[in-house]
Image (cartoon, rainbow, N blue to C red; front, side, top):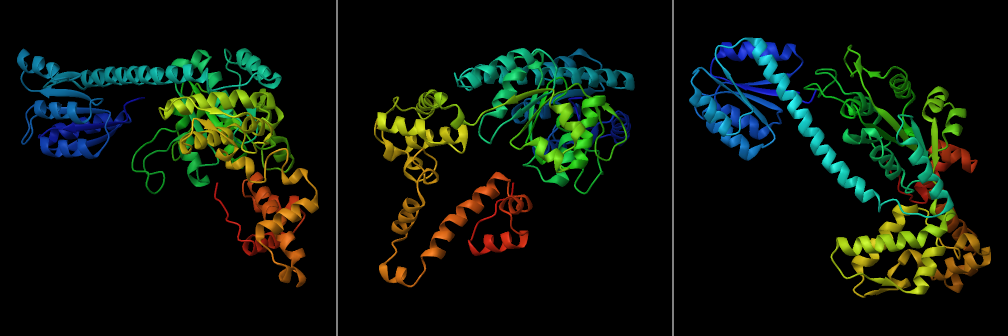
Length: 479
């Protein structure tokens, strides 16, 4: 149902009462206004899908209000009510942009038919708007997924095979490898292209709100639920829902996702009605779901339901032949976006870009290119325009690939340590601190700031890890 909230404006209390009762019985949220001024205030401050306005009211008349609606909320459908059966008012209302009109007195069945027709019209408008946006993005995607490596060619083949079907897909890969791009490519090459693609990051929504976001809620189901709200599954009906970072989903919600896969129905929070949904699920994770299953943090039955067609995206460091293709793509794209002549990158910088390990994968590479293009005034970009290449991490000449002696020497030089301090026996603590801080931070990032998992991997007590985080002044991020 595309129409959820309706405004009824009429100076007759009995008419407001009859219409609100009938519409609320149909499941609509209804606001009432006793005159044109109150209706105009509500239209300015609130969001409505349909307005039913009396043509003659104190203050602003229905026709004048219709003119205001066209200025303020051009997508709001308006039905005009008139007590005069003559053609003049009807013609004038339609000329000014009314969707339809009702002649008083009218049968409620007539009103129901007009509201249902308006609902279908709004659905069609939303579908056309969505289709335009998605088709535009679809064509942009042709240039968004870049790669000619053997691994990427296999991904393209899988997309081509699975897209026409409705099979569930599980995309696995590190952060920044382009999992959402792959999900969109599957949707835009499927029969569902004319329907919505709804993306949901399960790790970005607080656990207590995630159920409501996915399944919607009924009015009064919790504090702040002032009206009925459809969830992401209802919004994606007929199309595709992309559940990103599904490994972070709480166990109780996992069972409800399993029910959607099995029964193709959902129940809103606080509701009792089962609602049928026709949705294709594409899930993604940067975690090892099999490991989470063994640790009883992810349901085994849901894992097998999701893993019908697996797509594994390799990190950029394992498909280096794609790096320079991506560099060229992002260089052209960024120069076009900021409207500057196409810049070039000298060979030493290209060599270093190709050998860098890119821990943030494609997303990091794009950001690095954008930064260089925007901040450099020169048409030729050099290594100095890419600070990440000279920061001592990430590349093939990185600290992880050199001897401990070289690492210690770098740290000492970077810290400007003097001989007197060295003589006092501080070298051990200094080196340990320099190595320990990035190690702990790296593991926290990889475990999405889960201190219990990080402590287990390090082989230390959680309280010890907490103390080290405090002592080393590591900033904890909430994800």
